[in-house]
Image 1: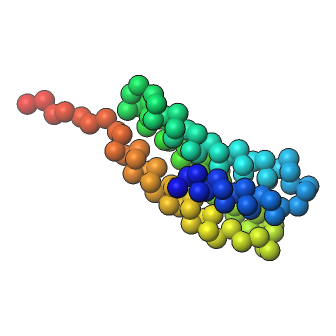
Image 2: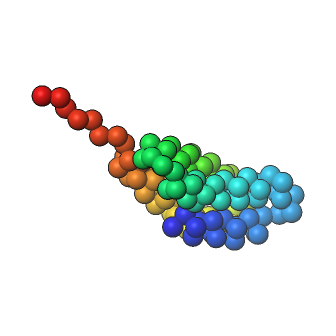
Image 3: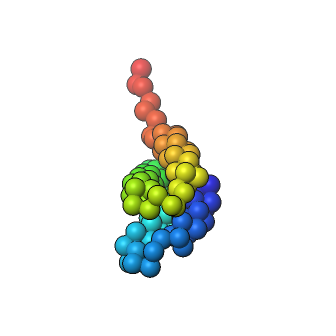
Length: 110
């Protein structure tokens, strides 16, 4: 799903004016690519704690994307960001759940 978000972000950035190439376009693309990249990197790490750390990094990047999409919607009302926003929310929910499942479990001592 995070890869679908990247695809959608690239579609949106293609609609932005040329003066945004080094601004919103670049920021949106880098932040969106960071999400699946961090998930992939974390999944190949040697511990659950490392994987959780990278999931939290991906969650942070998703918050960046969300904020930048709000900016796009406010500045360029002709660009539809609704589908991308829905994807961001879904990715955030999945990352939150995954992060919780990777928390270390505490064992109670008798």
